[in-house]
Length: 282
Image 1 (cartoon, rainbow, N blue to C red):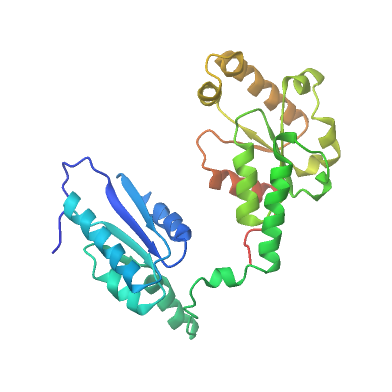
Image 2 (image 1 turned 90 degrees about the vertical axis):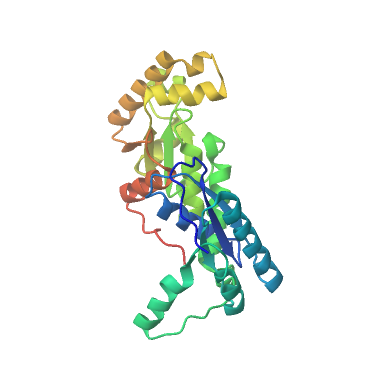
């Protein structure tokens, strides 16, 4: 039985991500695909579906959602075991088998059979790339918000900017996704009074990249953190932005405006700017 979407309904379309692993990668992929549509989606991740009972439980949940909302849920699956895949395929949903969509054509093009090994990525957890990524995460955490000036020579990039422009999430994203050791330093009023970068950063100017933001947006963000404070006032935000911009121009530091960019876009801009070769983790 197939349901047709109700154009008058304000309910979000239900999206299931069914995986025999964590399902995080599949969820990220599904979000990228569905972002192309002007619609609201509710993602439900169903991880570790590694038995017949769990597969039937997933089907029951999908069917229940179809009955409740009167429209088929969208179901992204990454199940390796054919038996489990066949069970979930019988659910009342739009089933999008990501392995069949991508792996099968690649097998044909490459003339090779895929391993179809469950959790294959985790078998490589002892690789150099994995260890580098863990080291990078630890490094970025230790060098967050100017906490430490030790080992800055080891940094792949040093992000600078005033408070609440996105330095911390960008640093951690670079570490987790690309294994980059990313330190970040705040620019504060004392730096503007001196008209110079923090002294610890001077020897590493070639590694520095700046983040900037629109004053109105910065004021909104800061008001969520410290409502009504001078820190969050629009006038103060404009002052700090103007001073930081002037300093970056003076020091020939490249920067990117983060106002309307995602963390992924900011990180990609940083990678391009510093011409890093750490674009893929092994």
